[in-house]
Structures are given as structure tokens and as C-alpha cells.
Amino acid sequence: MNRRYEKPPPLSVSSKGKKKHFVNHTAPNTPGNYERTQTSPTLSTARSHEPDDKLNYEIFSILESKFLFGYEDPRLLWIPQSPLRPGDSEAGPSPRSPLTPNGVVLPGTPSSSFRSPRGRICVLSIDGGGMRGLLAGKSLIYLEQMLKEKSGDPNARIADYFDVAAGSGVGGVFAAMIFATRDGNRPIFKAEDTWKFLVENAEGFYRSGSGSGGGGAGAAIKRVIRSGSGSGSSSVTAATAKLEKAMKASFADLTLKDTLKPILISCYDLSSTAPFLFSRADALESDSFDFRLRDICRATWAEPGTFDPVRTCSVDGKTRCVAVGGGLAMSNPTAAAITHVFHNKQEFPAVKGVEDLLVLSLGTGQLFEVNYDYEQVKNWRVKEWARPMARISGDGSAEFVDQAVAMGFGPYRSSNYVRIQANGSRLGACGPNVDTDPRAENVKKLTEIADEMLKQNNVESVLFGSKRIGEMSNSEKIEWFASELVIEQQRRSVRASPTVTLKQAVSKTNRNAINATLTLISKDR
Image 1: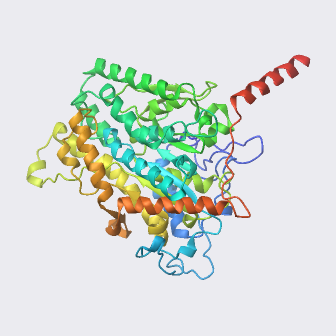
Image 2: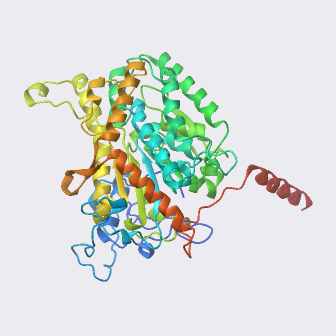
Image 3: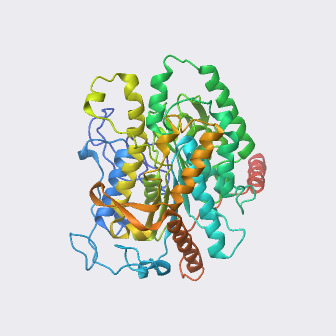
């Protein structure tokens, strides 16, 4: 499957005779005249494997059409129709009793019997955010600690319990780290290595006072606006060289195939002016979609104004992109991860709807503390608008995805979807350069804010853009989530049919043997 999310070409047919791309029902080469039909051979038709809840699937389809394919015209949005389940009405699924996980009542959640008999696909999503990634790193450390405690396994790792991981920016680097493997059996890095990696390399990656206000789309806009005509290019090049050196030291020549589970890491491809997702599932299908992990991490972290863009290509040289940071494409990749699971029927054959998912989304805080009034902003010029643009565009887009995903989960929102985010924190007090400030005092403040975040009550998005303060703290929510992950893994060992059927990469030794055999065969001919 081509993960370059561009306006699709005319319909093509694979060697297996299945529809592979998209069809243009109107004039060719006319912008916007595209209508989605069916995905690649690795994806089953949506209509034959629709989620049970009509509203849920429509929401995720709208998210995919708007945020992944860039469609704005509602007439071009692909919204499948799904039949109602027995006992359901147009108003939604039939009501169920409350869930009480580990003795704690979660208001508005479905019954614990609602743990799908098919099992649940466990999804991890990590936002971008530059130095604010320290907040997500702390969440990962606590999660892995809880997994060890709940499972009784001192060697438990996050990669043992999740089926899919997605990340943007620094979140993409963290995802690659905790799922990368050298032996095809165990991950190379522990969760605490993600946090240490950012702290130890921050001074090389970021200049004190560099950039401003964000590691996502808005922050990138601001840095470009303020950088003028290439000022500071030498320092950007120096930071880029240090980033590339650190990535090579961490990943060497490992590729997407050298990960334990499916991962999705975003960047923005300047050559096609579209988001691009690096996907392990695609890499296992073809070397044309297999990229080196160090290049992927370099691409997703290529924040304009902080690092140079990167020209990267697949291991066979057939697929190329000119990449800038993943935050420009999707600062919160949760919706992309969910869409991948819904469509990837080869690896997730049993999934039918959001009740079959268990999603943990890790945020990196919000910078909404500063308010402005009309008299203050009415005469602003470009320079004055830069910082508010950063906050609105960067944090706002991540917040919107959270709202839309929570709405898509409907009655399963509290039991199947958890968002960990620093709300009402002291991030604003860290200054406008919080995401790109490598100084020890900023690291200390962010570490304190991360600890504060874990103690805060979890805040849940509800319908119509509202928020609800939960009864559990973020740390308690992570602890509960870890218990659910352990329970899911235990139940998989006794299920008659597999919940996941992950494709396995051929080892490099076997690959070399196969290539040698093919060479001998060709010579004999």
C-alpha cells in the first residue's frame, strides 16, 4: 500500500486483479475531482468489514478523508453506510451497564463484559512536540513500570503489549526506539531510554533560545516566519549534523522491517505536497516502502527552522521523498493509527469496530494559558501573530483529533480510549521557546510538569467539544490501562482464533540465502 497520502491517480489494477488505488469519475488532472473507491490489496473493502457502529466508522472516514487526503469539499468525503446491529436504533447502540475496572467505577463506560470476545487491538500513539516530548517520555516510563508490576515480569517492555504504534516528530522517534529490534525477538531500547535520549542530545539538537513556541505545525510556521531569508542557516546545518549522528548511533542500518510490531511514523513530503506515512506493513510487502529507521526519524523530526529538510529514499531506491517534520502532517497521529487497524485485515482480521480497540494516546501538553482581547490584536502584524498562530495551529490540531476520536468511540470512550495530556499546567511559564530550549532549567521545569501531569485528574473529551474531569488521575489511568493490556495478552493465549496475525520479516541471514539461491537458479538457466 502506498502510504504517500496524495490526491490519488486513476484506477490501477494489481497483479492479483484487485483494485489498488482510486478512480477519477470526472475529468482527468482536474484538482479535487476524485472519489474514493477501494484501497490496496493489503486492505479489505470497507463495506465487507464495516465496524458495527455506523457513527464511529463515519467519523474515522471523515478524519481519513480530511486529514490524510486533504479533502475539504464535503461532497468528496468518503462516508460508508453500515447496517445497524440487532437491538440498535438510529440513535446509537443499545445501552449497557457501567464498567468497574479493578474496583473503580468509570462513569458512562460500557460493561466489562464488553471486552470483545474477539479480543482488542492495542494501539499506542505519541504526539510530537520537541522538548515537550519529555512529558510523553515520562508517561512511557510509568507505563512500562506498571506493565512490569501487573505482569510480574521484570523484563516486560511496552512492545510486548501493543500491536501498533504511531508517532509524529519526537513521538515518532520514541515509537521507533521502543519497537526497534536487532534479533527479531526483543526491543533494543527501554522506555526510560527515550527520555534519556532527548535530555542527553538536546543541547546538540537545539540552540538555546532557538525557534519559538512549538514542535508541531504552528511552531514550524512561526520559526519560518521569524527566520527571514535564511538567517541562522549555519546553526541549522550544525544541528542537523548532530541529529543525523545521534540517529545513526541509535539505529545503525536497521530498517522498518527491523521492528517487532507495525509502526506508523509521519512526515510531510514537499515533493508531493502531502503527508507521508512510513509503515512497517508496507515495508514487509515491498522493499520500495522499506526505509532505514535513522532516515525515518530524521524525517519526522525535521522541524523547519530547526533542522534542514531531508531527501530520503527506500532501501531499493525506488521510493523517494523530500521530508520535513511530522508535526506539519499530523501532530496527533491517533486517527491515522486507528484507520490503519480498521483497514489492515491481513494483520487484524477480527476487528469490526471501536469496541475491538484499546487505544492509548500520549500528548505533550498544551500552551493555551495566554489570552488576548480585541484591542490588543486588531493592529497586529505578521510578527505579532506568529506566537498565537503556533499555539492555535499546533496544539489546536492535536486537540481536534482528540475530540474527534473520542466522539468516534462513543459509549466505549472511557473503557477503550485513553488520552494522557497535561491540562492547565505551567507550560506557559516555561516561556515561548519551551519546545526548543535545551537548557538544564527548562529540562527541570518540564520534568516537574511531567510529574505534575501524572498526578492530575484525567480529562476526557466528550461530545460537542466539551471536557469532563475524571475520577482517576493520569497515573491511575495508565495503571488501569496497563492492567487491561496484561489481561488482553493473557486471554489471547486461550482464544480459539488469533486476535492478530502479524506478518514476520525475513531475517537478513535468510534474505541473503534466498538471494544467493535465486542467483544460482538464474545462472543455471
